[in-house]
Each structure stands twice: as C-alpha cells, then as structure tokens.
Image (cartoon, rainbow, N blue to C red; front, side, top):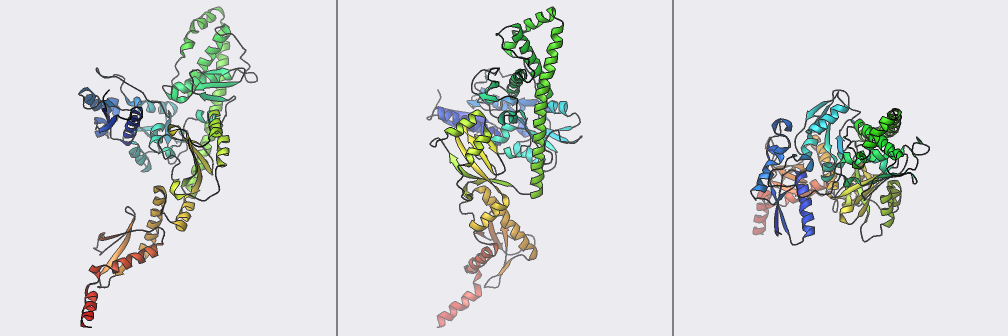
Length: 555
C-alpha cells in the first residue's frame, strides 16, 4: 500500500469537509499514512449563471476529478454520491461509500414556516431536477427557480430577498454548522422520536424490520443503514401499515404462520399501503425483495376469489388513511410551532445563544443517558440532563450562537431553556447546554468583559461597540487635539475590533494609528485611553516638547 495518498476535491466548503472527513478516517486506520488534499476547479464551479441541466448536468463537477484520477495526478477523489453521474468511466470504480448521515431535504425560509405555508406564485430555489419535480408535484402553483453556488452563497441569495425559500440538503447544513437555518423537515422523524405513533417505533442497529404483534412495536434498522432516505421511509411505512391491523385499531391481524395465505395477503396490504403513503409525500416506494415471492400467491388468489381485491383494497385504504392522517397532523402541529417561534423571534428580535453547563465524555458515567437515547425517550433524557446543571452563571468561553460546534454533533432535543447535543464520533459525548437571549449575553459582557469569551460572544461585543460608536458619531465624531496643535479623528473599526485614529481627509479617515478595543471598559474609557496614548507619542509633542527641552538646558 502507498504510504502517501493524494485526495482530489473541489474547493467548496462542503467538498473540503467531506474530503477532510475521509482523510481523517484513513489516518485513523493507518497512523503512518500521509494524506494530502489537492484542490481542483471544475467546469461546474466556473459556470454559475446557467442551470446544470442545460450545460451537461452532474458530470460538470466530476470530469476534471476523473481526468486527474486517470492520469495519476491524484490517488482518489471524494464527491457527494447524489451528485455522481450514473456511468463511471472505464478504468475507474466507486471504491467506497462512507456511512450515510442526515438524509432529508431541508426547507429553508426567513418568512414562511413550511412548504405548505408558501403563497401561490412564491419563488423557491433549487438546482436539482429531482427536487424541482417533487416540488411541482406537491405545489404546482409555485415558481421553482434555478439556484447555483455553494451553501453560504445560496443562503445569502435567500437573505438578499431573491427567493421566498430554498431547498438544501440537511446533511450539508449540518456539516457546515448551518442547521439553525432549517425551517422544516419531514415530520416522520418527530413521530419516531417523540413516540407519537399508535405503537412504539424503535430504530436499532440490525438488519431486520418487522412489526411484533405480541409486543405491539415496530423495529427498524437505523436510518444510516439504508442507501437512501426514501428506502428508510418506505420500509418504515410498510411496518406502520402492519401495525394498523392490531387489536383495537383495525383488528386485521391474527397470528399466522410464515408463508400462509393470510400472511401473504397482509404483505400485500402493507406493500400497497406504504406505496400510497410514499406517493403522497413525493417519495418512490420500491417493492421489498421478500414481498416479490408472494406475487404469484396474490395472483392465484385473485383468480380463485374476485372479492379478494375489493376487500384487500379496502384494508389498504383504511390503513394508509390512518398513517397519513397522523403524519399530516404532526406536520400541522410542527408548522404551528415553527410559526409561533418565528413570530416570537420577530417580535423580540433576539437571537438565542447556547452555553455549555456540563460536558460528559467516555470517562464519565453516561449509562442512564445512553439507555434513554437508545430507547428514543428524548424527553426523559432532557429531564435527566437538566440535573447536571449546577446553577452557575454563563460560561462565556463555552457560549455559542449554535448548539452544534463540532463535526458529528447532533441536537437530540431542546426546550425553551435547555438543549442536549450528542456526538457519537468521539466516543459518545453529551453536551448539556443552557439557553440565553442575546440581551442576557450583552448584560454579561457589560459585567465581565470578553477576556475569555468565545468568538460568538466576541462578535456580540463588537456589535455593541459599533452601535455605541454610531450613536456617538451622530452627535459628533470624536476628535483629539494633540500637544503640537494637530487634530486627530477617531472611529471604531468593527472588522479589526480597534479604535483607529488619523487626520481627517475629507472622504475617509486613514488608520494611521490603531488601538485594540477593551470590551471590559466603556466606550468613553477606551477613547480616553487612546487620547492619552496618542498624547504620549513623540510625533505629536512637536514645538511644546522642544520648548521644554530648551528651558531645561538653560537651567
């Protein structure tokens, strides 16, 4: 095996995250291995003003990478699987696929709480033909516009008012720390997490999916084990349809032997029902491999009993109706909650910050937390996590604008006061975080300064200084008269977090002198300090300093 590997990657933030993720995995596997990245600009990166479908599609992002692989310039390339063309050039192969992370498409909007809340004619942005087709299937009254660029570019276009909403991959937003921009995800995950279905749904790391009649519970593999989000939801919907046949619901199920006519009919109900549900939510449902074996039995049954199809379709309709009604109700509640949160956000105009109050890692006893997480009891996990809070005030060093700070962070649950973040990639850590309003962060800064503060807290301090200086500037731009009679103007430079001083030129003030701003002091105290430091400079002593020297000489 080569001891030095070169990974080819595009230059976007997300591409670099993915390439570095693979590089770190290789280094963990072989600590003596040297891995380096080679940044490659593709045609897709150069042409940003034309829809991909018009200029060659997904291949525009891979052609240059493939050529470098073929000529031996790089040893491997890392790329998003969803964006790879179906045909791989001769001489190349898809060597490995990393564990799948978040599978949702994310609806992002600054104004509307959900896709359903968009008004007719609203402008929604996406670069994906698949997403466009799904959007227009659900909402043919929308105007779907092309959206190109990296994640931050697309978010800026939304913020600039070019779109009413945009669709992005949840995984990309999570990986780049932009999960706070997500407005809506498919509500099925909420159903699983918060135990809102008619029976418990328990994702486990194993290979089988089934509904247990005796225990009245659904067992499915974890989402990450499936090739796609659609495959996961298709399987889940299948088992959810089975569960509607339980006693006290539709009373359709009776313990039967595997392979019997009754078993085969129930499989038909589950397959047809899950297909209808998947279609309703714009997903593709593939027939389960083990269900194909029952097709012949279904056909034989149709020949023997013409009523078979009528009664079966009636059961399909009843079962799928229960599932969709429940999902739609949850979606409506989520939309209402998001709307209320947005209204509160707009009314207060305050951001929320997250301060770590307890960080539990492998060396700590997290058994109880692990058990609650594995059961899917996130409310119980949150209640237990709160007990770790000792009542101390804000730790400004570990206070952030987002609860997700590290690669692999996953926000398990939060309420109005606390949040619990889990990271399974570093041995299974829990970060219990207390929420603060921006006003509370500002009050803390005024009281304690920013000597040990995080970058996010320092950004708030800069905002405070800039706001205070703007008020001062509108009254009168600060000006100092030096001992030699020269006049220097002073202003606050937010970019450098400094007070800059220099002579006024009529159009701008040059930063002839720059002094670090002390956020432990008031604006007035900072200006006074700058005045004193300038007055001590030799270049501003001039004639006054010379007269004093001569007088001393004559004495």
